[in-house]
Image (cartoon, rainbow, N blue to C red):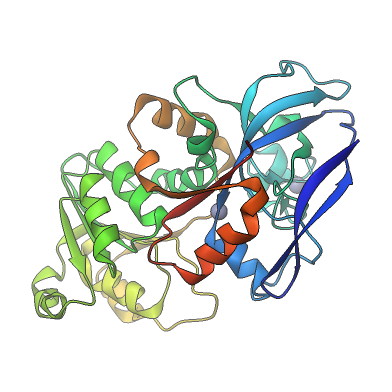
Amino acid sequence: MQKKVWQWTGLNEVTSTTAERGQPGTGEAEIRIVSIGICGTDLHIMSGHAGFGVPPLPLGHELAGVVERIGPGVDGWQPGDRVCIDPLIGCGVCRECLAGSKHRCAQSGEIGLHYPGGWQEYLVAPAANLYRLPDAVSFEEATQAETLHCCLGGIDKLDIRLGCHAAVIGDGPTGLYYVQLLKAAGASKVTLFGMRDGRLELGRRLGADVTVNLRSPDAAAAEPEAAETQDIAIDAAGNEASLKLCIDLLKRGGQLLLFGLPGHPILADIQAVVLKELTLSGSTNAPQVWPRVLELMASGSVQVKPLLSQRYPFEELDLAIAFARNEPDEAVKIIVSHS
Ligand SMILES: [Zn+2]
Ligand SMILES: [Zn+2]
């Protein structure tokens, strides 16, 4: 049995092909992929700058679909079950894996980053990586559980008190999710800093109390006033300027969550970090939070739909990638779905 596949085949290149459908082995399930989120990481890998992934490879790590077949030894799943997929796979036997922190496993890798991903009709994955979708969560929305779980893992590392003030730097999807999570966690005033008016407007719709366009002349004038006003700052941009802004904005004793990836070493005012007694946390994946992500989506505490900006059929995945690359301001989150 053949399946349709899109592969990353070389520098910024995707190619459509077919491949033999895999057989789910012990502990595995075959998923019929329904929706795929296009992520900045996909573009990063395709540009050859990510330092991992070897073409030809189907990418795609933001995935939702339906259980098609189950392998031996799989309990609790039936063909037809609606699922999303945690793409992270650990060795399963090391200390970190056994402690529930498979993202810290020295052998870990991700579906769609290191292993074949969901740019195909069917994908065989470990059944342990599946999460059941609540009825209220659509396949399109469920693709975002992966992004949201990373953000929620970061939120869990902060001590967020009701009524606190928090700043988010970065108006990409993760910044927009962080705004919502901070509000849900009880922050009374969330300020979103970004560079695109459309995204900032969306941020206000999603709960940001104040937005600042860092490209506007007013922003630079307002900065001294904003210094030392925030209990929490989240760097969802990951560059030297965003890190500096976070450190400036934080009150003494404040908490800084480092989330965006600079991609190379950057300078930071460590003296200010020490003298202000800031707490710094880094955060990536968080395998233990997946069930709560689905709760947040199903209950409406976090809204995903307003971020879904373009939709493409699977047959036009190449066009979706091209749009994401050429129209970064327009493309908040592109979803590719099978008809
Ligand atoms: Zn992603
Ligand atoms: Zn391990």
